[in-house]
Length: 247
Image 1 (cartoon, rainbow, N blue to C red):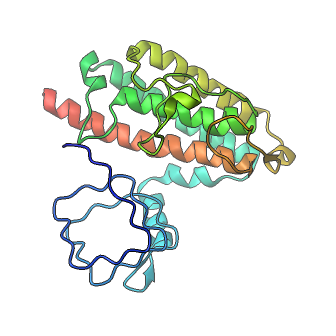
Image 2: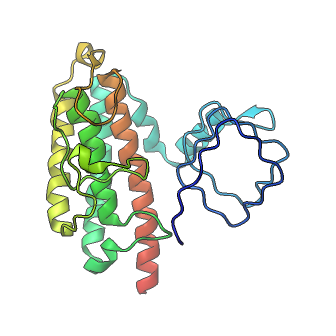
């Protein structure tokens, strides 16, 4: 599907628009109001905090159902060092099995995009960048935290300013080596946590990067855990489709 960057329409009223079969990637509907909409067969994912459908706030309902479907998800909300360590061990186990599965596929499959989403290798590159943002830049306060192979979304229009090289084409083995190193850094950080450290405010350095506001160590690690879980879910979904196509 051709990529077209959409317009910025804050405050605009749109009537009788037809989005049948359209794909909206990373749109912002913060504070938007949609009336008389048709969502039959729609598939929506994203941050739904405060979202109301037909007068019902749906985020708590969706979260409860997701935790029923995926019991390990509840662990990601841990607020103490022991709980965070357990959550990270769960994520490590999930990725260990998925890495082993990926190694059983033909190498080109790991670079293949499914449904216009990131490939398996690109997903690993994105998680490298997420760790660099929230662990290295924020928790560790590194001024130049980014590995050049990290990948951001389309919102990052000048990746070179961060030291990123999105056009690089490293092998899966090369990416996996960096990725495992970043995962080890997260594990070491969590293992050294104290309750006081979790409450510490992290201020970002003045160098280009994200985030640009202070967050607690707890918040930074929570973002990392959720990024890991969500992208693991996407990766497994896409590996299922790739495996089915080769059978």
